[in-house]
Length: 356
Image (tube, rainbow, N blue to C red; front, side, top):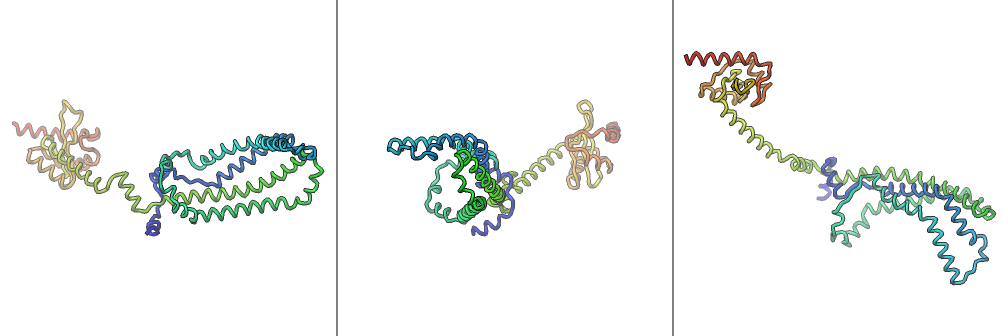
């Protein structure tokens, strides 16, 4: 059943689905990109601080390396030596750690905007469920991550081996160097290893970034039915919209029919179009369309006009032109002034003749 449901989700997620996922904190996030940025920052910081770090390291540890026989190994002195070594190492590496923490925070922002989801903070029994934990531990995703870790370790080891192995015969000469020369030489080797590892991690990060983007979109895929339901929720049920439109049209039709008896003239096709015009020269700048219709509605307008002794004038070109150009309750455009004025003048003359 679940497989059938997944197989039906063939459509790309809508913007609404993506926005809802963002609110829930569901965003594509590549750990490999974070790891690469942290490693790259670590390498840059080391390269930047290496002169200072080498001097401090030399100052703190040269005595122990060059003259170990002069060191008193009493209990109290050993404790002091250990504290001094730890403090010296911490002082050397502290700037790197601080910068790495900031990079770890901002690495995620390089892939997506800042997200805060309160939903992830809500307590849930599922989060502490042992069964769910076991399923996650032995899931396909966990297996893939494990294999990916093994491959990365193997490749990093291979890169390090390929760089160090040709230098194996040169390591014997290090014993003849002073402490600073040894540090410079080790820095050169470290730079080669770091460049090799960074090149490999860049390729891994790029592949993982695109995979995470693809996987995120795949998880959010929707079925055609879900898209229809979303459209129905966003725009309203099509059946309801059609019903509302029908009701509005019915109200407009009733209002038009109520306005026909008050019209001055109805211009007809005579079979397909009917346009009812009203003109009060003291209140209006130009005649106004109070009713218009096509086919059956046009016929109804003519019937009401006859029942209420409203003049009916057959002018097919004018009727069609007014129907296309003028909306209900709008004044006629200036280009129709002369033609309509002639019609209304004709109607007024008829009324005067009848009155006489």
